[in-house]
Length: 520
Image (cartoon, rainbow, N blue to C red; front, top):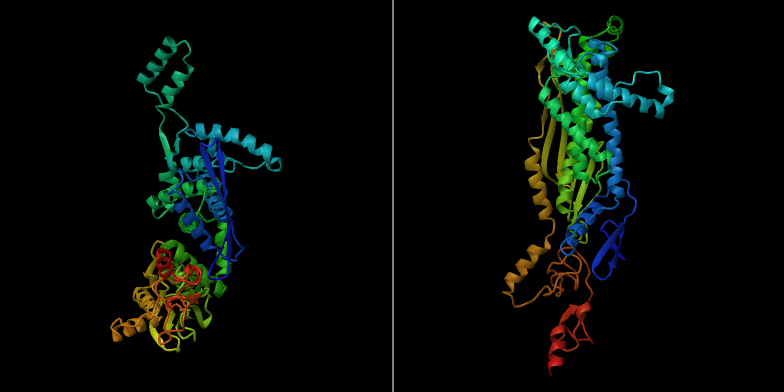
């Protein structure tokens, strides 16, 4: 059993148990117990991945038995998948019932689907008898079957017209075959006339990018099935899946909005006429129409603030991923800014007075009107409060008007501008790298003394593993590491007087002196 302590005070217990069988086969079981945290524990994920990679060097195969952290991600992702799937079923139901009627599943061409739905409906009613009298065509249909109907479904005309040649062929089949029913039925089915292609005729008119919709649907099925079966997830794969869900859901909702707009009922139109008298409703209705009919993002104040928050969090993630495992730096938690507040800070623990510190400060200026700009001002300040560098992240809300066909047309596109972030990120990394003044001081001292005086030990620091343990007061207090500030335990050799790591001393002698004495 091992206990690992992180720099932020969290402890992880890792147990290893080896079981052998007849002296031929060995099984190593590893269990990690982690503390509860408010946010996702990225350190726990790094730990389990690192253990897996290290152990696979010596063991034949790694089997993941249980992962509570991954299970939580799957649970949260599935809740979002449930919403997206319901939105898809609702949209598909509206379209099919509107154009084909409530009995659409029994249309010619959907016989296989109808049979499948019939069998699944019986199981659905057995499980939920309280809903035995509702339409369960889509509720009892698998997602794969549903998308099969949408993308590949074909409706044939009810009447089949046979030519004289076809009629003669049917008669021949009836004479030649002892059991001619299925052969004749297949022959007649092959001569049916297509009435509607469900995707091309019913759904595609409401979808701006049909290829993107099909791609997003395929990705959604893959992602949904993955999390539905509780397969392992990492934080990065979780973010990718959420992004896939968001893309598909936005495409569904956009198509649904377009359908509702073009196939609007008389009552809805009357309601709109009354509610348009209210100026605020008219403003929101106009913005919603502009967004749904042009496909561009029209954000309100909350949406703009949310995007600014995401940009800042991505900046924080870039710093966190690069430095959080380096004990030479300390990174604060992320804080969503209000007005000119510190978003996060980075400091070097080697500098005792706390001056080796930089802060990221952000302030928002938001105007969510159409055609207006909003700006996130980001400032990097050093330990004395001076500005090191600045950047601006901007969002421009688009604008438009109603065109000749009563469809909204964009006259001014929405724009996300993060062009200044790359240079800002590079300057931020450079500022972090230059926080610690001691490595440069050590180089200067070594140059001045031409190597005649030794300022750091020839053994690494216990904490950071770098050769920066001070053994000369003119540089830093004895035993203090110039890279991470850790106070190493040093003792003086009784024979040569050299300062050495306490763990390497044997009977008061350093390793070299002990070896010399043993040789004598």
